[in-house]
Image 1 (cartoon, rainbow, N blue to C red):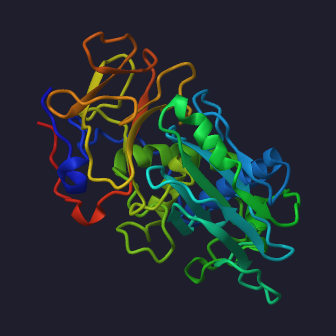
Image 2 (image 1 turned 180 degrees about the vertical axis):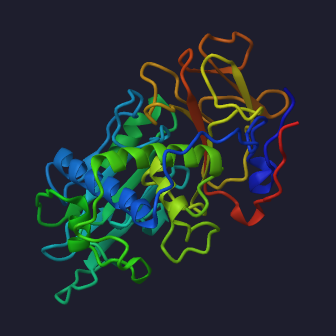
Length: 389
């Protein structure tokens, strides 16, 4: 099959069989309302905050992942496998909180991202260093020294990513994690109604006022339907992360579309597109959903127009997570270019034994893959799409 994806990121970020020809949409069980779209975001995120705080041992406690999420059990949807996570539910109920970040070498990706309770990214930076002071908008007391980050939420979420280049590089990543610190009163987080909790602890943006109500009828069944809707909408209407994760006033196309924002939960806690460019590929070049019953090849250039690094990772479409005991990720650190300057990845249930890089999938099961490009040269992105031929 001779096919090419769009020449994105200055004609470098491409794959030979990226599908932009979408197959027939599955019958929708329902068309969600704007309140349901918004509820899906805040309920998922609130539940995530509660679980993360419990796992960490409280709010204002750093939770480090020490191994790459290869076993299919990570609470993050569609987790990346090219860095370790450091997470914290920041608790501003008793005043400002300080997170101190170490300096890292220029050749290692290291970033901080802050997300509010409506799932908008309010701050992000590559290779942060020094003191970052989290302050709630309603706080009127003393503010410690450091770079101030204003928050509408009493419980913002901090997501720190520290690159792991290869398994042998893991000790270097762990050493960086050990240098991150947080100063704030440790608390607990629990609630019965995630919507009421969000309204009580977050200053809702003006444009979203009145969408959610404390007594909104949003059930577990509604949430499951939204989960299914988001997966379908992502697979049939989304080609990359443009408009999904930035601030509410982002000028990215689609950022004001509540469907795009809700579909972003498929990649919960993703980065804005100028920081990292993601593609989500569910279909093959014939518009059919990817399935382990049919081998599939993808070609990527080894050199890309990125200031940081690139990777390609595969996930189960059933769980939106990794597959246990499988190879899950390829990047410039565990591959070498062929004579054409590319790498070829084969998705198949059986090893291809043809010199390509094998990404195992389960026979008969649907899957998808994500290409991530950190520090993309967005200024040179070409939005002219080359369809399969």
